[in-house]
Length: 215
Image: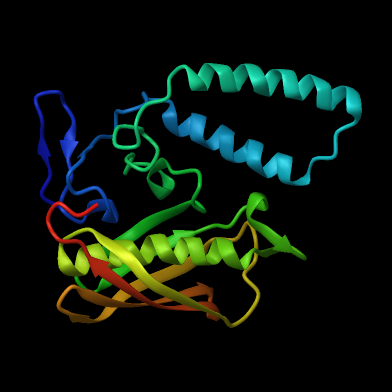
């Protein structure tokens, strides 16, 4: 990793660190020292809402409390390029609560290895992760693997997921994504998701490296 520090104390990311924002300053400070705790509380809220069945009186109370929280958050909204979510490389899934939380165990030109846990919020049914949530995780880690392979930002061309067995909730799973081959700007990505020795799902995807200045 070849980060540099700006005068503002922010870290300018390696072209493939985190997989996405090569032109954006990355920091472990944005959002404050407790931003990770804040994100975890939001994830816990999502988990609890997924299973909650409140009575009318509690629903009324919660609506008022959530409306007050939303008003406070709306007052501090900023643009996507400077929000902590998605840029906090010290936090699971870079602090992006829209993703199933994962931590990167290792990455190099041969691929990305991560540990991922699908939580209650990601329920599909019968205590199994929703297939769309699995695809979301593959898309993010596949993009990371593509960025590592070509040292640049990529967009998803296509992503196919084969579901081989049940993906359990609240279990630390192993995910690996790697570039099978590169053809110009086209990066062909493979991926696997395992619960121990059991294969849960496989990914076959195409990512396209962006040209300079492309969004």
